[in-house]
Image (tube, rainbow, N blue to C red; front, side, top):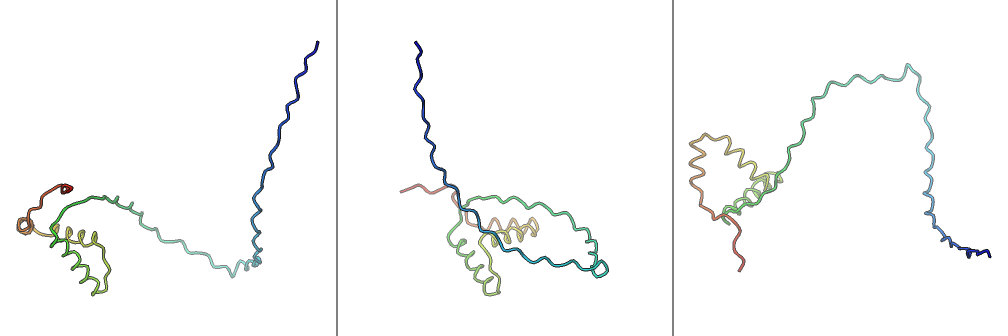
Amino acid sequence: MTTEKPAVTVKKTATVKAPAPAKKAAKPVAKPATKKAVAKPKPAAKEPAKQPKAKVVHDSFSMPKAEYQKIAEIKEICLKAGLHVKKSTVLRAGLKALGAMSAAQMKSAITGLEAVKTGRPKKS
């Protein structure tokens, strides 16, 4: 007694090939000039090593509405002078100006500010 296993048939599914990309037209090859006519490139001056870009830090802060509106006023003044600036640029320029002050000037500028309650306001 021989037991034969039934033949298993496997259906092959048709594969769809993507159309071949269109061939680009061949550009005419220019003949190289003679050695005498070819100008040798001058060695480039050594470029200073590129400094890596400083990483940007994202932060949030609170300020009184009047001081926030002052940023918009400064932006308008810059725009009239032909300079388009962002809020962050105005704030960075202010920090640079503060950094250039003496300790006494900085103290008087900072103590003249209105105290702001820290943290997020409660949801109503």
